[in-house]
Image (cartoon, rainbow, N blue to C red; front, side, top):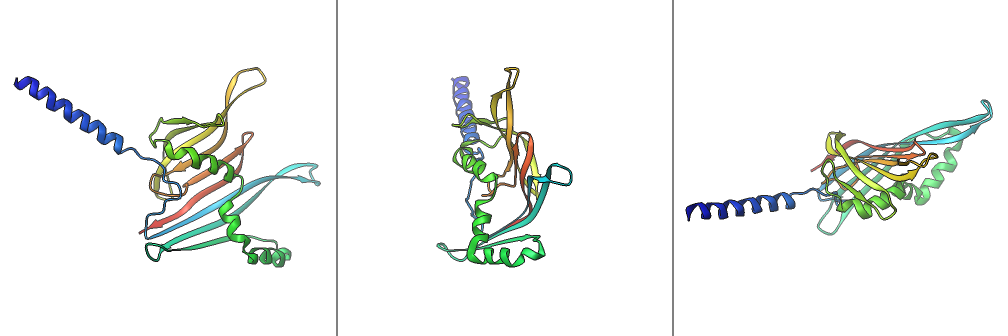
Length: 215
């Protein structure tokens, strides 16, 4: 009788332990900002190909800028949002560019982003259901697949390094995975720690967190 009671109790403890593990699973909380004060500072690098008449070929042009997002809760219903961009402009274009930003386009450019925007839209719809654990994967409606490869630390924040790829056939008819983007996601941080977008194997856009704070 004592042995049977022990087995029942032991089984109950195991079930509770497994349930705790299930409830302890981490998921990405996209656009969830729970801190009273939160600051994101990103370095954004874009790579574009442009025709160079001097070399009679396309060359890769690199553009860098700093993007800042600060959130401060004023009360339960209101959050103060501060957005800023820092980048280099040709001196002879300052008037046109500053007028363009003065019409309120700076904020929309920051929030809509660049090549990563489409990737983020897809990721936002489905990756929130992806368990953040090394080895996890998920197939999306467009046939692409997200895989969690390892843990990585960006700007002092530990997250999960993910790859997003689509399966295609090469010229020989072999099935291969084509990498479209890489991400680092942290469970309790509402924006990605890192985004890296690819086009035919070449990096076209990188958005990397370089400073982060919350309290």
